[in-house]
Image 1 (cartoon, rainbow, N blue to C red):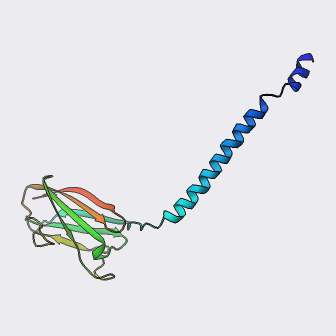
Image 2: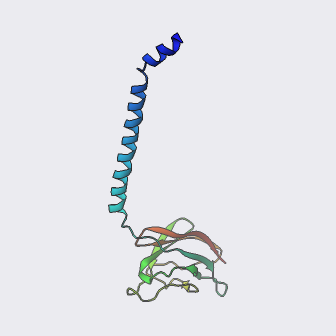
Image 3: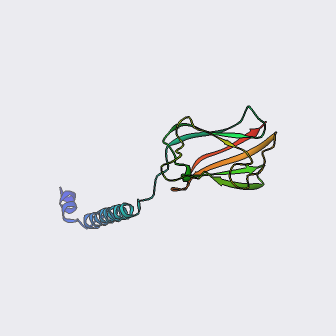
Length: 151
């Protein structure tokens, strides 16, 4: 009984522990409020369309690639850019041009990439690997990043 009375009188360790817990709780709540305000004001970046794209070698010829839209959201022709690199050396870019709302690339669309496509696209040579990257211009999201062999 003597130890129990001493235990009740000695409460020095309780106050600092409760104080630390309260300070941590206040800090977490303030951080959540600041993050909520920051993301609420900054969160206006456009989202990339959810689209399934693929690039294949054109089976009909030996100097063309086919970009296929296999499903998902439509992409306007002026909202994406494709970069083709031959053997990781020189890259050339081309952008499909079109007015807003026109020439939407939707499910089932197949685009042919040849040396006439865009400006400065090199001729595609058989038995060569090409690195193809397709980027959504509004959000800078990569829609497709793949390698394809032209046969």
